[in-house]
Amino acid sequence: MGLIPCPDCGKQVSERAVACPTCGRPFPAAESVTASVTTGPTCRHCRQTGVARVRGLHGGAEVVVCLVLCLAGLLPGVVYYVYRESRPYCPHCGRRN
Picture 1: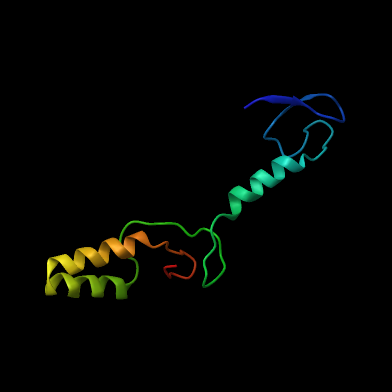
Picture 2: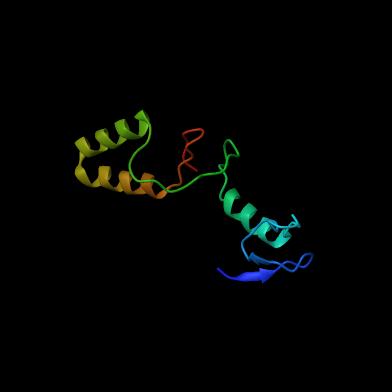
């Protein structure tokens, strides 16, 4: 992390700063970097951000289907588990994308 001079007051400011702490001048480049980090992928069902790949099964239906497939034969249950784990999960609506 480096320091850059503020165009208005000339004081040294972090290059990741949103605004100059001395004069308050905003730095739009830092704002766009911060916005892109917080947005991330969105859920196609509820349009919320924070969708990520998670480990394990979520929800009763996924667990029941995996158990039935494991009882029918180990291979179908393992394939289903790996497939469901590879799909992104939305913590807001509880659905996989």
